[in-house]
Image 1: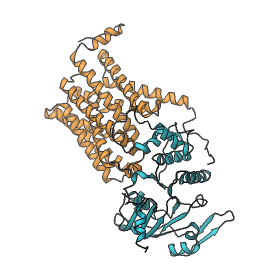
Image 2: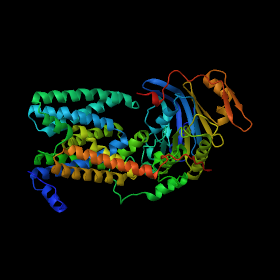
Image 3: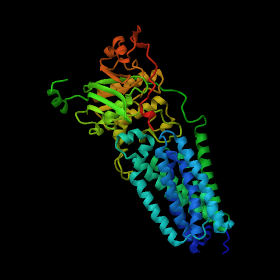
Length: 297
Length: 281
């Protein structure tokens, strides 16, 4: 294969679909972008970026272990993230609910072991550097058709959960005590969301690599939040940003042979930067009004 | 003990908003307060006072049905606690949304109506626009309700949160320290606002506070919790030298300034053991 960019854009786009592996990559990228962008909107709202980071790190030993055991890599991602999500859910119950620093300490400690284990598995597997690079920084090569179907199934499950439980999840993220008094099953939703987050991370890592998961999981949602406080529009914008970043990133990677993770991350960062600058220009003196309004009642 | 006939009257709609008889509250097996008997008539404005950790939020948890009494009976709007959850507006103690919370005030108010409901919120159904607007109008928050709530001041946030409790047209409002993080002018104006709304909407209000003075012009009854005991009655009976000295078991003086404000002198240090929810694991 030796695709070359021409000045003919429709022809360039057509070339993208010539090879089945590239069609699979585009399909998987699209599925993952939608799931990560919607899940990520809740991650940003709930300030669970650190938990998401821990999950992405834990997917590394999962994938490396699967390679060592001769199992499909995606099985390794999903099992490792599922187990890690369960562990974080358990840890956050024993820790003081209001003391997030305890939770971060547990997560931080577990991350180190996870990363070390990943390296161990990979060096036992044969220590090929290319493997390490594609696990950490992503690759669009070798995404099988069955992998696309697995990703599709997982995404439909995760998005269905968020569609049905999104509103109570939003309410409890903003005010847990009110939601609890109103009968929202706080604990069950917390655990369920962590598991969905685990699935989203495991899926995203298969495209962006373990280290660049946030390019699709956090950056689009964070940028969308800077653009609009509207909930529905914010989620939709997050999805749109993630899709654009993924498609353009895959296209550029296809033509330049530079890792897809690099392009997706840089583009996502660029969008976030624009969002921040735009808001800074709109509100040059910060967000909070300095004048306290007192109205007679 | 009251005559048995009262118990029947309590079941009817004309009965009391809140009634506690000989209630003992415990958290994690530890006693918080004991043998409390409180009767709150419908439409009353009640201030719940007491030092930190004395169990003011515990009282609200009992009324919400989140905590079972260790002894005694609790009745809320003529039913066991928890049964009339849809008729209660609850505002927990909080320290405000910070600037990174980019959710609009209108969306937060709306969650008071459907925030506990599962199901896909489709944009073309149940916008509840009129109810949201009416609740926001009631608290006078229309000017900033469309801004992200994190960008609103403490007083503005508190008004929006009160609007959230009002949107479901509750009969009973439970407000946990809504004045806590506000400056003095905002404290009086939020207290006046709550008073106006309870008259307009004919609601019963229980408001937990540290300082009774912003509330004094409006309250019908005071519930004072200290040292494991609960005292309830008209404000000037409860906040008096005799009553508080008895409650704290040490000499306390209540002075009245020329403008009618009450100053309590001689309060002992806060108790060494705290039972408030903030100390719960």
